[in-house]
Length: 623
Image (cartoon, rainbow, N blue to C red; front, top):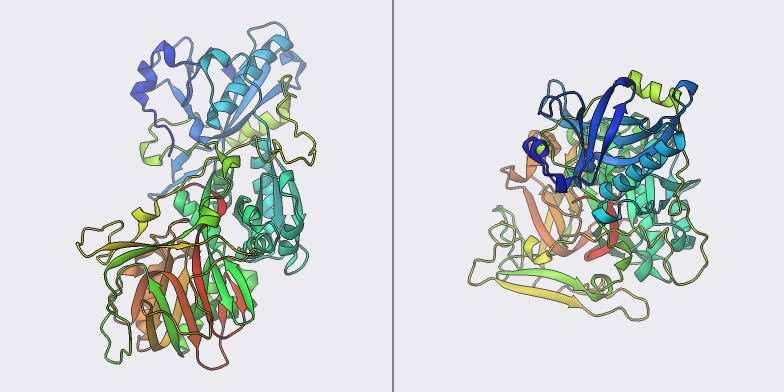
């Protein structure tokens, strides 16, 4: 979570650790001169005529900084001064609660050491270039601070669904997201989707070289369109690696919640601010997809497949879309009180030995599988070209270790900054402008020079053995089985799944039951108040399969739903509820009436099967 710098280290740091130092005023306090020092971890400042101590020292951690900008005064009295505004979003504890949230805290330094504005501007511009390098964790040698260029800007394609959820996605982007992206010098092209499937059509045709990645401001439905649009392209192997980011603009916002949750950022308080902060400070992380096959179609899922109670709640709550995410809670109560049951067959290939909960009417077959850990390995995705994303974005300092409070500006000061100061065009801004796309095979700076690192996890460490502990292979009978798929032939993704009308291999588990609900999830969240798979990771190579069998009482279901908010439902002591980690599954519902949802989108009712595609796509997140 970034470099942690304690208060004592700041006070006693040696001269060698200081990259830049100077004397500045802090706007609007023009009568106090501060000594300002810049290290690789942040900026410290204290009154020049005071004693440098924990009480007088102020600190800005680069893990909280999204950008900075040079400015000049609109008042002729201060025409010689050059200003530097640092855009920071530190954390603070909420009143009457234990949670910590980010808040806007922009600090503006003023330099007037030179008599001329140009002299002060040149000094301030050097500080800006150094700060931009350090807050983005770009390589910077101390000897190069006088000559380091301005880092090139990122250019993003932003897709906004104006009809998603309560219909406020564009308003959210314009008022909350766009100002923060501007502070980070991120350029955007915004496209409003006009109809269902528009996002898929856009991604099938977009020139990837024009953008670093795509950001979705909507619910989960538009993300589903983007993923399937990329997979529908002739160059799908490369296209699916196009980084995807998302910001909450719909009702469900499950992936956005999972991203905030993974980064340790708030979901309840100002989720848009926290999600935008993560987008700016992100790393590129591989994200699993799941290939879903039905008799007449194949789609790619990033979130979940639901049948029964959860699917009914999701689809039937559409009539309450205007009330936002509360629609799910309302419909959940309605559906539990009028509970439905579905007869069908559920089969899955477990990651490790499956031990079912006892049941009087269990008709399970293939229960005792030799103890082993399985994982899927796909050369097509794992050996892909990810060289375009080899630079780290800094992670923010953890709030528990955040022991230096930033100098806090009031809203009044923020208004004064905007009213009294104007931005200054960087004089050494050669790296600011995006060059024209030449159409060559070389990666353009918009997609190549802004580089991020792939933060990967060892899939073996995330496999769960029979005793339920991550990575535990202590059993002498435990065997690691790697199901390695060959490279694709004729552009088709290889599969471990037999055709839907063919029997399954003997190492699969099959349950022939009456179910209340079945949900296959690969993200932690299904909504802001529903942590369905709390130990899921973006790239763990696992499908987290949960199912509720007929016989459960309504009171138990209501209690279970209340536990979903914190993810503690996994410890719920009921013989009717099971949660299994698997690599693939098959669902065969009986009858012709019912609802099946894939990533919140309704699909044909009938048999389907899915398999995990480990690390198939790329996500802008922090993990």
